[in-house]
Amino acid sequence: MNTEATRQAKFNQLAQTYGTDLYRYAMWICGNDALAKDLVQETFLRAWKAMDKLKDPKAVKSWLITILRREYARTFERKVPKFTDVDKVVVPEDSELEPEDRTEIEMLRQSIQELAPKYREPLLMQVVLGYSCQEISEALDISKSAVMTQLFRAREQLKSKLRKDGVTGNVHELF
Amino acid sequence: MSMNFSEFKRLLGAEPRSGDPEFQRARHSSPEFEEAAADAERFETKLERATLIPAPDGLMKDIMAISQQPSEPAKSKGWWPLALAASILLAVGAAGITWNMNRGWDSVEDYLVYHYRHDGEKLMAQVDGGTASDVQTILAELDVQASPALADIIGVIKYCPTPDGKGVHMILNTETGPVTVIYMPHTRVTDGEMLAFDNVEAVLVELQSGSAAIIGPDRQLISSLSAIIQDSLVPVPGNS
Image (cartoon, rainbow over all chains, first blue to last red; front, side):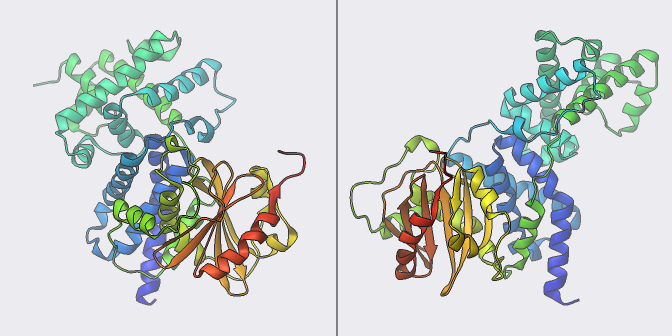
């Protein structure tokens, strides 16, 4: 296989491995389907052009996330996208779920959108990207203990919102 | 020293699936700890479920198409210099552009430069001389249709962001080479306005419904396409 073909194969592997996660993450941070797709494509475009600079394969995911976050920050400087599309693109709720569970999940989704960015972003990094507290700390350039506090508070706020909105069921067992 | 319950709850709230050995030991140290961990796990399952978003159709294909481009070192893509360059090169004819300033990009020109740099070359690379499928289906979602003659030369078509919502990015196979058309269903422009950026020229045209930007290598080509696009990209009958 020639060099260009090897590069392409490597890039396609990256796309397959991280494309969906990046889109999900982008969708949750910007809340806009068209912009999320744009961010992901721009991220991979930059990754393609700079792929030869990547020496540590283990760093691929955080490298891509860093590109995406920078790109989003650049976009965000120019405009505040409307956070409106998440409900349109989420997986339809399983009809086999209990109505109570469906309600909880829908309220959770709404509550995540309402979280302050400083809570929402680390939470999404953990839940959507599978990041550890240490990885979040490195990505956001804040201390690990600060990350842990933000994650704890994010979850507390979500649980509190569910409780306040009168959702019954399993969530109540958490308190 | 073993972890107390308060500390354990705090860790559960921060990293409920931590593999830390001390955390794992604590988890199984008493029924109270186990119950709290089980509750946290139920919450995590719901959280995961709530955040689940599938990749949109075509995303992977679009990403992989990037690798068809020549690989070159990333170039700096400062936005403001670009916007400035675009505005300097504007051949502004009549009055200022009709623009709704609260839509995000500062102007339609800003949007075009930005978007074309994102997707322009990449989509051009996908043109293979054939006709794209689903042309009318995609356009119909935005309440417009292409005349058969136009539909026949649309080689690539995809939804794209525009300053005012979803639009369509098309590559036309013309006799003199590929030309980009970006349909903006809810954006108003000054008809006939020209701009130039990078190595391309663009003309903005008002349509019966919405507007379009026609982008190509030379002014004569895109100007000649203006009238054709205006006549050929029209509202679906019955929709205003």
